[in-house]
Structures are given as structure tokens and as C-alpha cells.
Image 1 (tube, rainbow, N blue to C red):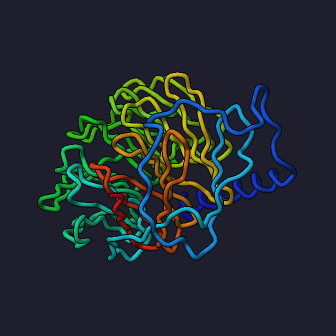
Image 2: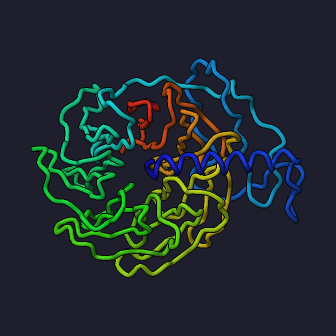
Image 3: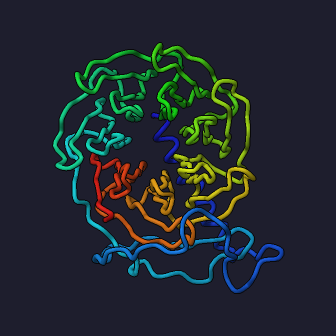
Length: 379
């Protein structure tokens, strides 16, 4: 059984235990909390967002959203699920014969790359959904695929314990990154494209030189647990990794020095995301997405989804919106400041792990275990 399957089972078990504990009654307000509702907390973005386009409400029952500001009791009421507008995908990227484990936009937004358990990465036309190229060479399931910042290369990670760099124009494999002793989960490029970080259940995250495939640093800060998914800070000066044990660490890329620790988790952490200005961090875990102030490591707000295991998070390029993905097969769009849920993206028939915005912020891309990636227009 692969680590990803074990992770899914562990996350679901953690969520079930949390739900059972919640049945004993609502938590008491924290000291100083108001009984009138959530306390306003500073967070990125403007105070208002454009009204979402009207769309039919989902016909299937979905979890009710609760937004909680830290330092105040949980909201006493929230809009019923049927009141949240839903959207239907405009483009479906279909062709993989296994679950799609990641989907990413090229820096110019014109193409999309996907990775799959079928052992391939595929390049697609973002406007038409047409498959343009396959990248074949890994000997086991792929865990991820991302573009280099210059848009000329694709970096893939796999259960075969390697990561590989590919030339987009030719489809040729350029080099292999070898050193992990277990599957390589996900990766992230530094903003300048010179470094790439990978995370593995072997208990390490590794920082590599992209031009030589040399391992520059092996980070073991999550020991005896393992890092799950990494993210580079927008200025390239720090990396964040979420651990399978619920820890979130921020560390220096070339020394491994731990700069900050974000505490308060009880289960595996999904894909973290920095706001574009680097001031805020979103982390999905245990049926919530949590918003943190990076400078103080203070938790600002929780976006709670009772009954849903949250897997991924992403900020829009302007920092106004946050998108989350979940095991219920639904991605959600939120106002990053107010915490209001604006829209649901419904259509996938299995869990969705990864959600990303297009570079211009006008579209959202979602990867699912149903074997497809889907694109929705936001404007």
C-alpha cells in the first residue's frame, strides 16, 4: 500500500475522531471572546469581493461551511449549502488512465501540465483541453508535475524514488534527481528557478541545484515524522513544509535552519500556500484551512468544513481570494479577508487534492482522483 493511501486513511480517521469529540457539545468561548460572533481579524485583501456569477445550486448534499475567527466562539449560524453558487467546469483535461495527482499552469497560462498514477505527465492546451505531449520515463506512479519559473521545463516526482527534469519543447528527459529512499511526493521551485525542493516519506526534504541535479541540503527537521508537501516563500528566502505529524516548519533553504514553527495540528498537513506578498500562510488540515500571520506565527482564522478532509490551498495572484480542495470532490473559493465562501466548483466524481489559480487569476484548475483535471473560468 502506497504512502498516499495510508495518508488518506489517516486523515479520514483523524477527521472522524474530531467529529465524534465535537458531538459532546460546542467548545466554550475563549477568554475575552465576544458572544455576538467572530472577532474581526486583519488578513489580506479588500473588504469586499465582486458578487459571484449566478449558477445552479448543487443537487447533492454537501458540507455546511463555518468560518471561525481565532479568539472568538464558533459562528452560531452559516448559510445553508444550497445558497452557495456552484459552477460547472468549462474545460476537462481527459486522457489519463489513473488518478491525476497534480495539475499546474505554465507561467504564461497558455498550457497545463498534469501528473498521474498511470506513470505519465501530460502537457495540454489550456484554452482547448487538447493534449500536446506526454512525458514518459518514470517506472512507477507520478506524484506531481510542475513548470519551471521560465516555463521551459517540467519537473516531475514519482513513487520510483526519483524526480526528473524535462525539456518541454522536445519532451526529452534532461536529468534525474536521485537520493530519496522512498517515493518523492511533491516539489516546489525557488522563484528564480535555480533551486527545487522535494519532500518524501523517507523523513527528508531535499534542496537541489536544478542545473546539476546535485543535492545541496537534506532537511530532517520533521523527524521522526516526514515532510509531506513543500512551498517556497515568494522572496525565495524560506521553505515551508507540512509534516505527517501535524507540524508546519519554515526553514532556510541552504542551511536548514528552522526559522518558524506553526503549531496546533493533530494530523497530516496538506499543500501549504503563501500569499503573494509572503505575509500570510494558508495550511489545510483536519477539515479546516487555517490562515496564519507569518511574522508572528499567529493563527488568524479557520475556514471549517465539517465532515470534509481538506487537502490543498492556493491564493489568487492578487491575494484577494483563497481556494481549497477536499476529499468530498469539491473545491471552494473564499474571500481571504472576510472568510466568506463565494463559490463551489462541482463536477469531479472523486477526491480533489490540488487546486491552483491561473497566472492572471481568471481561472482555477483542479486535479482529481477521478482521472481528470478541470478548469473553471472565474471571470
